[in-house]
Image (cartoon, rainbow, N blue to C red; front, side, top):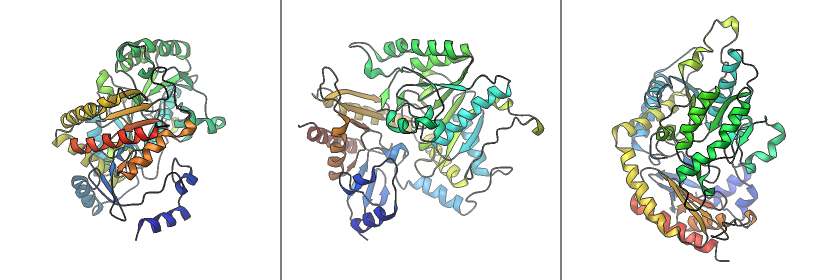
Length: 450
């Protein structure tokens, strides 16, 4: 079996996600992967690729991780899956207990789903349904930030604000209140992230004051708007948001699908603001990148609004066929066990420092508008003019040039437009970080040469 054979068979039958399939015939040749180990992927002809984006941000402890592998093998011999409606099993129970233990205080109940978008849908529905059960039927709207992204199903898409994904489906989506965000890329020269984030909160406060009677919840991605070009902001914004949601009687939904499990430097991004949301959505790194699973954590106050006699029809009748899948739950437990038996967050501090050091040379590049980093997430924004931050026309696809060069050098980077970002597995070494950054530097030089 060789690469060409796999690609030909693939293009005959597969429709890939987030892709213009015609690109794969010309601009973005399909890369067939045979195996993976650690931060490395290998194709059918032996070429290796450093997975600098954790395979869409899901892989935490490397491909074919021995600890997770063994946990899955043992679970496979016991139970693969069982209906969670009216039944339970050890892996789902243990994981729920563990998530309640490690998430911020007050998140006492765990509801499972299959992926991040599904978790967002659950949180939106739970919030709306909570207010309905309390007789506040006028609460039907959600408040969201500009440049936000929460998934691709219709509810999740509606509360997002990245036009590339949302605009086409506008006629199908519910209306939301969109508020200017705290994206620190737009701060004034010399203004700190904290000062800018606090200043920008005034827009959210006005929106809450105006729409409190109609709003179910505010939904945000804590600290990093990942699909929104990895734009970042200060934890002070989250602290103010928690206080304001309490003041105006509106729920706070924290979408930690991408930023949870150590990506921002703490186990959960909300910890950096010292807050607990009303709903926390988790997925991606939850299973270490092995299996689709998500969870929505919420508190007993929310739970009690649904807890009633059946004939009152206040129950949350939402389900997915693979809810609480035993294999997914076991992979998640193994992933959390690695956090608790190894000093992962401390090691990540050293790796994040190595990334920061390697990023320094990009700051003075004439076509870099900003270098930004939060924990194990870093990004380089390419611009046509450094002084004015004029963007390159998106049609020029400068980021694609970086992507293609990196693949040729054995590094998997997948830029967001003209933003080159890094979100590697936590088992990457400092030497591999240097390779990743050197390759990005070379790619950027090629991408901006005309």
